[in-house]
Amino acid sequence: MARDTLTGSRIRERRTVAGIRQAELARDVGISASYLNLIEHNRRRIGGKLLVDIAQILGVEPSLLSEGAEAALISTLREAAADSAATKPELDRIDEFAGRFPGWAALISENHRRIAALERTAATLTDRLTHDPHLATSMHEVLTMVTAIRSTSGILAETEEIEPEWRTRFHRNLNEDSQRLAESSQRLVSYLDGAGDAGASLTSPMEEVELMLAEHNYSFPQLEEEQDQIAEFVEAQTTLKTSAAREMAAQALRQLRADARNMPREEMKAVIETNGADPAGLARKFNVSLAGVFRRLSVLSDDILPRPMGLVMCDGSGTLMLRKPIEGFPVPRFSAACPKWPLFQALNRPLHPIRQTVTVTGRDALQFECYAVTEPVGQVTFNEDPLYHSYMLVVPVESGDTQGREVGSSCRVCPSAECLGRREPSILVDGI
Amino acid sequence: MGKRVLLIEDEPNIIEAVSFILSRDGWDVSTHSNGHDAVGVVLAAPPDLLILDVMLPGKSGFDILRELREHHDAEALPVLMLTARGQLKDREMAERAGASRFMTKPFSNSEVLEVVRELVSA
Image 1 (tube, each protein chain N blue to C red):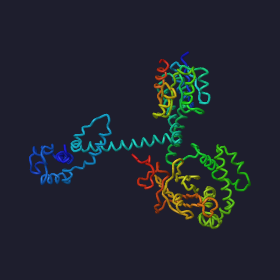
Image 2: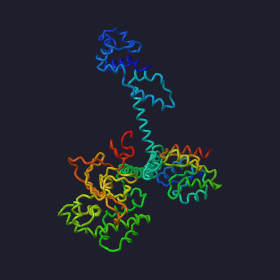
Image 3: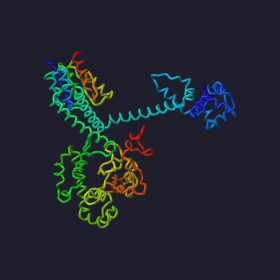
């Protein structure tokens, strides 16, 4: 049945919704109830003044009755029918169905869209489970704990006679496993939130270095003072399991010591107490680069400032090479970071420092002041393109009236609905 | 004494629970919890049924099973593989490695019992 012959079905649907009896509507527009009945069953065509009068009483535009709003709906219903392998809906009556049962048709259409979105979500998560070693490990932990709990509770529930010592042991196991399940789940949620847990799963030398730095709270006063202790110190660190990690750690600590010599702890403390922790002012005062100040502030801030500061560093490819995390500003562990970070903007403008207030996407919407700068690596020489490292100091601020630039952690855990920089769908957004 | 089941699994509380339900059902259960020397343990005293976890410290259950199938003594050994991953490719890997059955965690006690009885009586 063609769509334009369904005007009667739409009148019937609208009349029913409006709670008007067929006889009442017929009387109001000056026709017999039996004639209206024929119209409503699409056995008489309708148009002109009669259609306008009926539409007026039903409180809708005449075009809604004559043309319907179901073109898109029918298109989706056709897609749903095409996707269905098991059932064979009556495609030749799809217009009639949409016209006579618009509510049911809309429900099918909505569910079809939702199923498609969920299938995409499932595909994304399946792919992630396969390729993300941390997620796979976390899921394995959770499922292992669930298995132990299910099996143990099954024994307690289903075994009629069980010795007291076994009962006690299984109760203890349940308690242990439920605690471990809670911890595993929290780690998983923390990971998905992008907060990361340096100790949860170390898959790269960089993570070993970051864990070692975190274990020492980024504070190495003994290395700042003494000579040639770095190699011995690195060898003694049990968290540095690979030679690559030990080498990278030694390099980071040599940089830390050089920064400390340029900006001694007590002098920094005195200047900050007098003038505040303005990076540009500190760079001028100590005649050092802004990147050096960022590194030094991130290390010292835990001791001498009211609130710690975070630091992120990347190379010219955007690969994160150093992360000192700060609460509320999640830095991704495996995936690429948010392209809206000032860290990456600075890569486009070497030696042009950027200061920008940002608001982190998510429920808390915390604000941070970000200072970013990109500096060449090593000595700059004629006719040789330098390589660059970009640094970003992340300073927590009280959320004020200023609406900072919205930034996230990484696309897959960022709920931002409209972002031109989005690389992949978010698993936090319903239906992706 | 019932027929022998060897359970190779690294999670102590799963070992305890599965051992308990199998013992109650009359099976003679022994356990082992790492992959390094699992092949040697199986071959030293081949059980009537092997329950083998996939993710084990030292060596994966797939590798253990592949090695076992190369030995005459374990060619026909019924093996039930346990894994927390139920993806098709894991099932296929288990089949290729020579698993008799494949069970995804979390499983119920009755499922384990049913499959163990089935595999040993087959």
